Length: 96
Length: 327
Image (tube, rainbow over all chains, first blue to last red; front, side):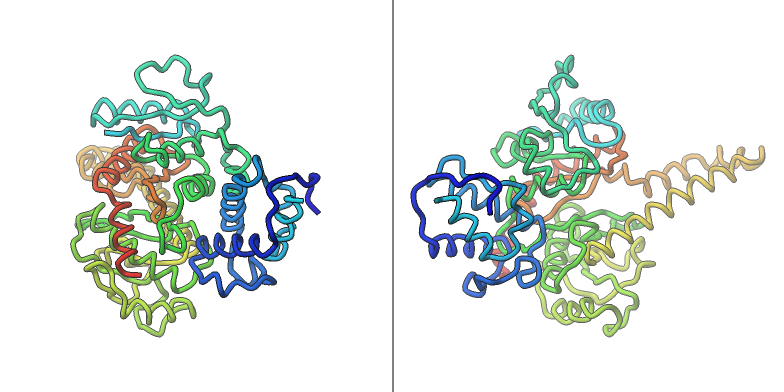
């Protein structure tokens, strides 16, 4: 669960969040987004190191801030985001 | 000409040696500089423009989270200055990982380049320096990344050293194609058919070849590259200090040293890291020079010179073209 209570923003569907996460990850890792499974582990399956994860977080914050002012992923929560699904669930929960 | 953004707070000798180096770059080479750092520390400097930054990322801080949490740090602000077109390049003698993270997260990665790499120049007496990369950014690499390091290194050698047809080699434990780790063997195959922007793959070289004219670009994963680099630096430092000790142990030896002064001076400069200013982070959308943490004024002056030169020749543009064409 996120460290802070969720915040209200323009609602966003889970599928849309998954697409956004895949697209951003694909950009960062220079891989095909279609090859990114929802259950994929950032480190073990996708070879994403901590810096790549921070790139992802910053990219998501930038993109999603347009829908919800000040959208931010807490640094305390970063270590819990181990898979694509974790990231998607986190964002969806923050959007209420 | 846009200024070079210099992190005034980074390194063991900040801010005094950084400021001194910046002033030399301005006075002796006419390079405009933008000093980035804490206003209260840089108070009293009137000749060099200041970009205020209230925070400093310490040398032992975790790179990624530091950049995220310290958005007003001198490193982050310097990288943003390049991103936003307020500076042509950035230089820092601060936390290497955080410098890389700042450049990566703020300037962004060049499309089609999977991982930026640190390119360091190694002296090669009688010839042009050898470009060693990756010399510490990525500990574990794929063969695809190594290939990109080689391709970036070739472009860098062309622009930084004027080598028209760079000879690219893999750093291994033997010259034979079958020698090395599985990564090196796999990379050997892909290197053999790859395009190096007019350069060519010449096979494997060994550690002993790094300070010779055996290759123009030596490619390694960051772990191996960093060990090679630090071994060379440590060996040179120990050798020169021991030699100096021996050469001043007897009056006759001291006299000989006086006579050979110019030659030793030349050798010392050739092998001293300060001469080269710093390493360049290749693969991000801006010029980022990473200087040694112990950099003094001379190293900073030279780092600023290199930064300005790389911005002037638009190495980033050349890397972008090379990777958009070859991928």
